[in-house]
Image (cartoon, rainbow over all chains, first blue to last red; front, side, top):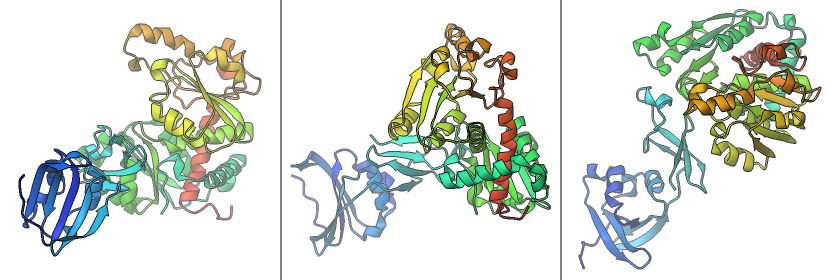
Length: 142
Length: 308
């Protein structure tokens, strides 16, 4: 069993699907942070069999929870103070995401208009369907 | 600031008001001939479209306003690489309202976000063409007296035809409308129209291949063009194309008060012999298109309450 040092102040992204932690690391821009970040891969989990965990030493404002919710809204966020979990946050699918995914429709204005943000709107929460704000191209998470 | 980017931007009440105004204009257009004195419409057409552009220009000229603009991207600053966002900021200094056609989907929405004048989407790629939908709705309403209680057959290319998708999306908001979707299986409506629009709203519809079989059932027949380039093989195209040539023999099967609509241009899907049939409404439809665009310009410029 591998031991990773205890976190005194910060937050833990728990219940990450095994193998997805590096993708989250990249999408949340964790590589740009100055603080201590620990990635644990394939940790044993009663619920999931195995899971990934990311521990971040610092305030929750360091990450965009909408991006995290979009990637996987089943991830739990545990806020740690004085070495103890003081709050468990659950995530939801964000109603709008900006510059997380890109519109792949070659006929969309985003393909030519410089510096236009790629905005997707959640149009069907049940089926987890997002559509491009401009051309309504479908992006399905399922 | 109000823009028109999609037909669904207008509520049913707003649509009724607009169509009432268009009807009033159609009864005596001369009463409205000075409503837009001193106002300018910019027609920003990044791809050619004779009918839509001229219909917008005729609408503004009929209201006493003037028009400026360009008819293709080659003759605009887009050829120099200017963005839509920059172009619309400049045009906002020159005109009071603009109509934009652009090959890229969502371009009018980008323009609306930066514009200080109302933006009308005059067609953006295969996405939306709201003033065609307004034209279709006005035509049906004027000919039938109501947008409720009828059976409409939509015939031809239902897969790629944006006018068909917009019309279905708009008509499901009215009562007791039955859709008969007539197309080869290769050109049926996309799944999202069938599932997310028709089934999700519990709208009655059926999908058939042969036009003759359903002609007697229809109150409105909305024809569209079947395009050769949509087929993977020539034999399939040849097999299907004759299904959808509307001729006097097929018209003989239809009700006496059925009307034929077509967004135009027609190529050969409606025989010219049908043109003289009183039920052929596609040229009237083009005239209604001018009236509804006049009403839209007045609404967006907030001149609709002005005494005429």
